[in-house]
Image 1 (cartoon, helix red, strand yellow):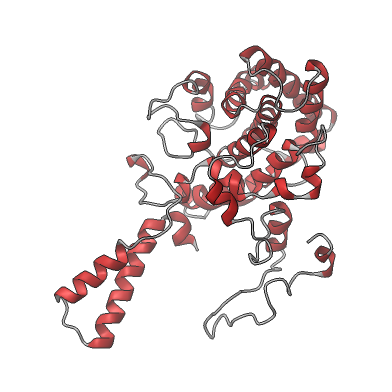
Image 2 (spheres, helix red, strand yellow):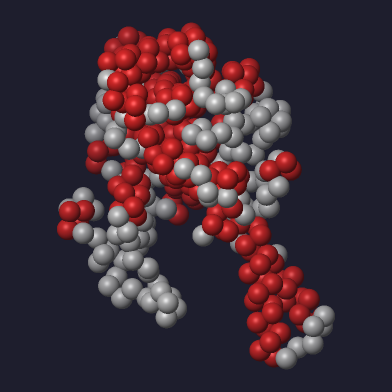
Amino acid sequence: MALRTSDGGLARAWVGQQASLAFVGAYDIPAGDAVTSDFVFTIKHGDVVFTGTALPYRRAQRVNSIGGVPYGYYADICQSSRTPEAIKGLDGGIDPVKVTVEALTPGCVLTDQGWLHNYLAGGSSSWASYVMSVYTDEVLEDPSYYGADWGMHHHKCGVGEVPNTLKNGMEIAEVVGQHFLASYDLYPAMCETHFGGSQRFLLQCAAIGAATGCLTGDSDLGQTMWMYNTHIQKEHCMRLGFYGHDMQDQMGCGHNASYRSDQSCPYELRNMNFPDQAMHVGHVGGYVGICGGSAHARGAAYSTNPVIKLAFADHEHIQFDWRYPRREYGRGALHDFMPAGERTVVCPAYAGGITANIPPMYEKKR
């Protein structure tokens, strides 16, 4: 799992090598034979489903890495817009705030805790618990709903209907940012839980981006307000995190309007696939929710790719229910899942069916 998370291209090449060696051993084919060469080439370069785009050369990663999967794909993988809780939305439609905070979960787990955790530290640091503050304790719901309610009351309109101007975005960012900073003053225990300046920065930025994207339906403006909050919080707290943690964020407002390949690209197509992206702990996963909330606030059925949306929609036959990613990751932490399909003697096949291992407490929710 660590290998596939860190470098999908390398794993594919190694599989081709091992399969070819097994073929050589089974049929006693002399090494270097043309048949072996063709077999190796076919396996290493066979058709596979690629969702990860190319990364900058300095990342030293091969093809199909998780770091190259666009944020919009993660938003489409999440199926929270199909749940009864999300359908009964703020103004009678789909609740984009609910979609946003649920989409943050796979974004944080797969990109930050999975790919970035292994890529930068080899899986040896405490980052796995660092970014859990984003999708636990429902800490994002309060400021996100606060911003959405304030925006609809202030502009006298529904979600996705606020004009996507810089002035409106700055108003939303300042209101939500001040509300979030005041919460840390009112509830010191929350400040102790979010022990790092970069943690508090991530949560505030994610709430501002979610509220702005949900109200305007513009993911690029939501990301710009994420960057704008950098200056708001730095003025309040004098710092954001450690080292150069805020470098890309402070210059991001200008770069968001640029589609030059070294500075930016359409927001739904972003990940670690351009050099100026802020690749910091606690950053990567927070970007994902802006795509999902903005798309559904506009009334769109998907964020970026309908094929990705449909591929993860079959919750009856996929063991991981992507309608409730936060709940499912909690089940994983409790070791609640069992292997499905054919396995070896070490890990036998689970004969109880895909849904037979669900505890009674979750059965009604499904």
